[in-house]
Length: 339
Image (cartoon, rainbow, N blue to C red; front, side):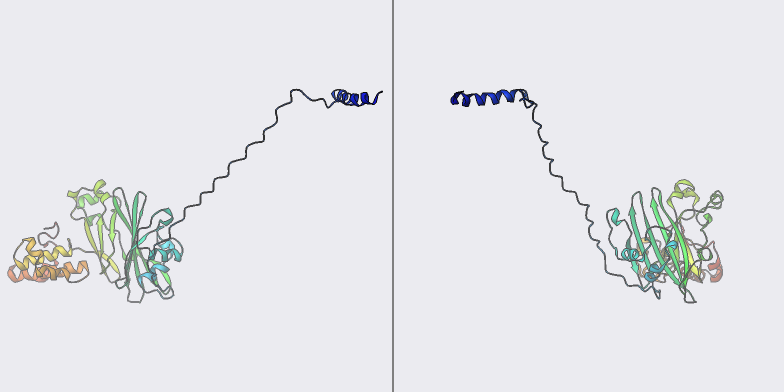
């Protein structure tokens, strides 16, 4: 073959061979796969909220090796004696509570705040606001002749119909705690508040609100508001508040009604010869009588004796001072019901 024709035929032959082979080109090729779009960058994780640092007050010193003060006794008191979840289990938690003097916010800070710390008078109190109500606690102690401490502890809760308290007493001696509530305290009977007929209709002790003394030793007891709604009416009551008098290691009902303040008013009415309350309250007589003494029941008794002295002095026919003092029926006007 002519060399120029051979050169021309070679590309044609190659093309024919290619078309007849398995490598034939598809005139309608499938679409090319599109790679997936890259995923958007992940959102940065939201960090957990950071709790605000606690606003704690100064440290409160205490001695757990030789407990003497109300703070010492609070810190060493066994948790199972506390009767509520207000204070936690560990001493570290109680120490933090002692230093919390403002209302804490948020569930992480759900714990009581210290309301009152009176070391000279041996008094300590806390309160805690929560969902659906609130609670409070108070502690005080009584020195005993044998050197031991009689610790009183109240836990009060508040709800829809008012407050109600529980009360416990513990004796601390030589590192040992002993509950002695039944030895030193009795449930306050209905007869302390209501008429005999109304009291006889009750089957359980009354719900009461108990206030420990910051000064003095007598304990104030008030009938709970729930009882006034459900169990007795106001016209069945002869008083809504009583005083339990402390004497020689135990408590008993103070039989003199009213309050020391009312007895002071009554005494000054006798002294001044007027029943004008503005004049009496503004007088030196009332200021002096109101300030004397710290024991509620003893103050009432002392003021009744003074009134009896004035009564017998002005009218000897009424009998002796001793007879007047012991006469439960002699109660000056205004003492029981108010002026």
